[in-house]
Image (cartoon, rainbow, N blue to C red; front, side, top):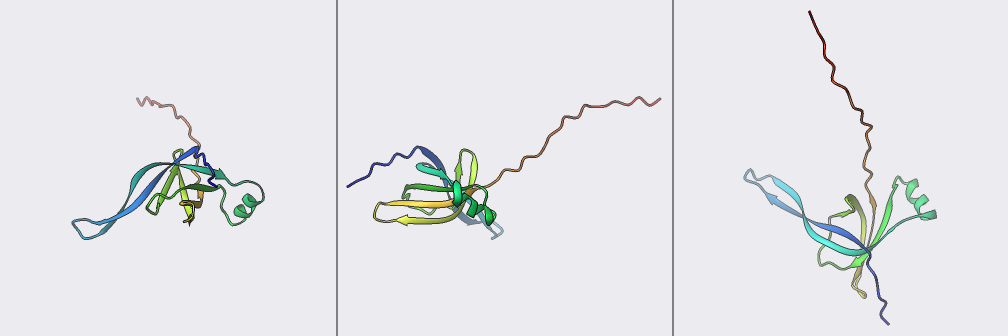
Length: 120
């Protein structure tokens, strides 16, 4: 019996590519492979408390179809997701990614009015 899945969220997946430049040093870049539909769940409740005890504040679980490559970087709604583990399910051709949303530091901003001095 097949279960229909609705993938309501979308994530952008990136693959890592390494090249040598003209000075023979290794450079790493992330190349976007496109947006992919998925189910993204932000962990709540007791499991969230367990993650917070080890310092992970925004844990998520992503379930999606296999994509044919190993994602090295994930973005969701403009936020970077750090990958903790990727577990493939070969029977259903899906994969489950556990990770967490990286916190974006918020710095307070102030507006400074320009001042003029008259020295005589």
